[in-house]
Image (cartoon, rainbow, N blue to C red):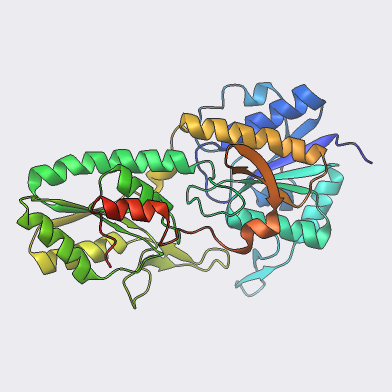
Length: 365
């Protein structure tokens, strides 16, 4: 059996706190424990397509553990199976350039490729593995926490902490001005950030993609608070939430087959309507990309480090086509194919929903 001598690592999709912790763990484990060389691939799959790699040594990863972002750069626009190009007529077209990836892997003699990213990144990794035999090992990363194969993704805890802290700050101004405040958080089509930040921040109403809401029920909740002498309300809404019978609200559509819809604006939709219905001054805040930035929490640093170590271990054991993940207290592997088959979403009957309901939270239903 061929010995692993050289590993490549890329970070794909949206950035999030903890990526550098994974890179550090992969480099340190590979070099210190096995004497394996590590090459960092620049800007996600774009680096494989355009042959942009650099060797990573121990000095390159020294001190990066607490840093946000990724020292390798990232991209969510460079799918090698749907790569954008401009034709002779000046039109944007998409074509399969995955052969370039194969050549880059072969030329640089990469015996394993560690792909750090969410469902989009792992879907591409799985295609490379199944169609071209590229020896991939996945590491789950997304603030949305919507990837199967792991109980939690690194980056989520940091985003949750930022969102909760923001809700705490908005709480004081809502109470002072006797307003209804609508706070929009990220998560795309999964409501984990909204649900947990809403519970942690004392949200009176939490709106999730998994539970379409009714404005009448939101008004009912705020009216009840007003009758009890509570002159303000906090509404935490996931960016992918939508009203019953309605559609998601988005900022714009773009010419990108990988991610054509840019979500955002549901907080304004809810805020404008609830003010019209209640007569109470209502303001909205979109937290946006602030949730992706900054230094990772201790939990995310530890989880990302464990993922990096176990990704190298999986490569050594030739467990290609697999992704590492947290199951209970242990790091285990599952096939990437299984991990991306269905998104991990909030179940309406789960314990967190029951807990929130028990303490009086409304979900707009």
